[in-house]
Image (cartoon, rainbow, N blue to C red; front, top):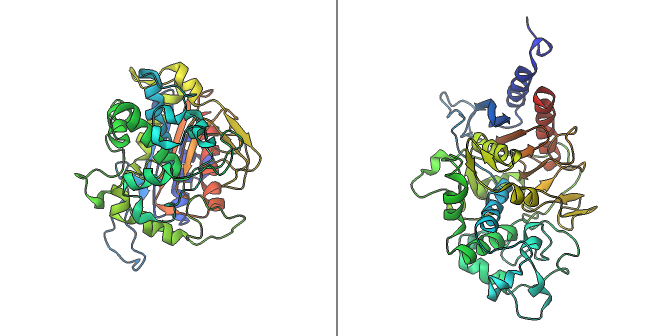
Length: 386
């Protein structure tokens, strides 16, 4: 009988993927790995619509590489890419003040009026929590959220520190995209990010012409070991409640650029493979090398993020590796960049190795457990291909 030790290293990655399913870490998942712009791992398995009331469904819906998943905060880099594209193609600059493009954002002469695009993209704007963060019924009303943000005062001096903007990040970025381009962020992302890269099953908010049943059902898992808690815009909410909230069709269809990306691991991996290659993939240039270098460069490192309560290293719309709390593997270099999504998914790029990985699941787990799951996968990928 063969064992994991007899398999070649790519096969060991596949076996680890299957092991995670067998152990019940999630009901269904997808794994995509790109090296040198080529898709070298493309795995999918488990079920996409688990029924917690019954384990006896004779024909459960199987997860395939085409199954759409809710991406939580893995959406943020997609939204940020829209602003990066505008830096490449318009007069927008990272050190512009937000009020230069969005006059209602702040009153002249106030501390808030000093917030820059760079501050927004690196979680340094001082607006980590808005009055509507705990009101999910309002997240579907773009104008109401924008008005609430306009009425906010900064919680700290912009640029003084970093605090993860769990929901406000997306609305700030999205409104800047709309003000600078005249196009809503969901449509802008489709035209200038997803379509050029052939990401036809990825969107910010589920399109009206796609059935809700096409999105994998999220399932919450009780924490097996909790070493910390994190608000991240969902203070006090359990994994089950988070899954139930983001399973709501009204939430999935809403354009919430911090959390309602819908897509696949294969397409997320393709996005990161493009960035790992300096913004170009298969003859399509998404962003200039200059903008990619700036977008993925370290902007701020804090020993304790004011929202997350742990060390964080931020680029512009991405997180950088190099802390014990990142989710890009325990043996990755500090130059890795990417983003995770609430207890369920992660994507990253390693330009030095020209390597990219996306691991997407429908199981919402405690952050400690999620980190163990995705770090194990990232380490296996790096040993196999790095």
